[in-house]
Every structure is written in C-alpha cells, then in structure tokens.
Image 1: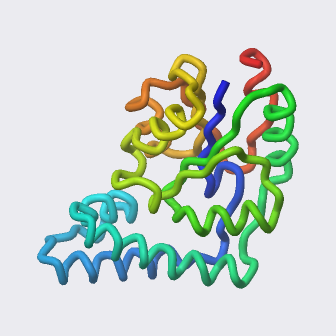
Image 2: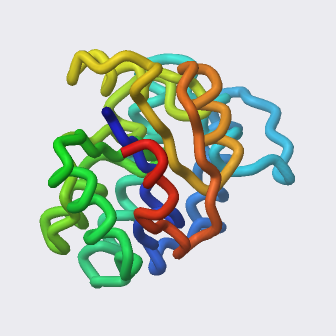
Length: 189
C-alpha cells in the first residue's frame, strides 16, 4: 500500500513562514501579469490561478520557495510527535510512504533531511505543473511505485488535500493538525 501525507499542518509545521506576506507578493505578481485578483481568495487558490503558464508558475513557485527557505534556515519548523513513529511503522509493515504538499519540494526535502521523517518519495508544488487540489502529485506517486488507487491513501488537513484525493480516486483522511496516529490506519494494515 501507499500512504501519502500532506506536509504543513499534517505531519509538520512551517511556523516561520509569513504567509500573509507571501500572499501579498503573489497578488502583486499576478496583478503585474494582468490578473484581476480578489484579495479575499485563499493564497493557494490565487497561486494556482496565476500559475497558468510555465513562466508564471516558476515565478509563483520562486516566491513560495524564497519565504519557505528563510523559515527552514531559521529552524522555524517542527515535526509532530507522532509523525516519525507512524510513518516508520507503516514502512516496517512493508508499505510506501510519501509526501504530497503545496509547499515547494526543496523545502520539504530540507525538513525531511533535518528531522529524519521516513518517506520514500516527495512531491511539492515545484514537482508538478498543477498542485493540489489537482491529482497530479498523487497520480505521479502511484505511478512511481506501481501501486493502484485502490491501495493508496491520502491524509491531509484541508479541502485541497480532500480535493486531490477525490480527483485521484483514493481514500482520503482529513485530520486536525497534530492528530496523526497509526490508529487511523490499523484497519488497513
């Protein structure tokens, strides 16, 4: 089986990212590209809307990465206490674990390397053209491991995770931040 996890607010927290500032930069960039942007719309939705070409997506991803990199460099992240034991148990049982996040892949890799989160693969917003709620990350992971959707599970904390899971046709668990536990999966493993 393949167990895919969202990153921020599911298995870890990037506490030092000023998301309001990130959103302001993304909006400013989008407006410079001719987009009429409603500032009340969530950052992820706005970023996905603006990222309609390879060039614009690269710039939006760069904005995300610049802020995330500062937070990781300052050590302003934490991994939830149950994350490592839960993922390690799944791997010990012979299952694959992966991360699919709207954070950038380099950021996720840096935190994984610094903390030892046991994952077999990572997908971030920089890994695919269409981030969550599109199914691209999940489909890519299922293809990488050759595991069908009937044996794949997505766990996250928001409707982008739920949307990606539904679009990919996999069973999806939505949890509150910090509540990941192996007991969620005992009936599956």
